[in-house]
Image (cartoon, rainbow, N blue to C red; front, side, top):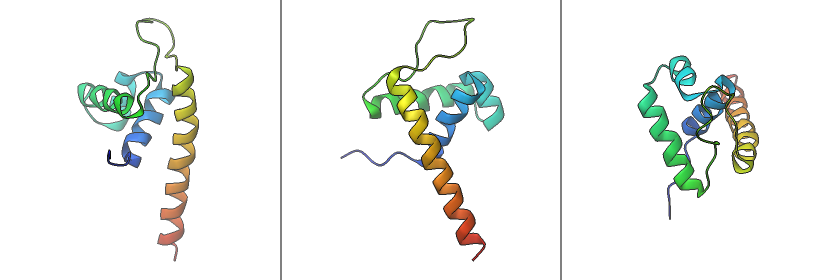
Length: 91
């Protein structure tokens, strides 16, 4: 059985979508572009699906159907994790 997906990875995936590219997201996240690209590739392998349409240089980043579904769910998961952490911290 594969280990669960880390919230950090989902957070990084959301950043790639919101920043419309791996390079821009890597800058915002302050991690290297190759490390982030590798993380996205591993996420695709774990999901068993391609998340981004490749080979569209110069055009806006495009999600596959599966990528759109994961993006919606990842945003929900990240928001829930952040809210839970905040509730715990505020006691």
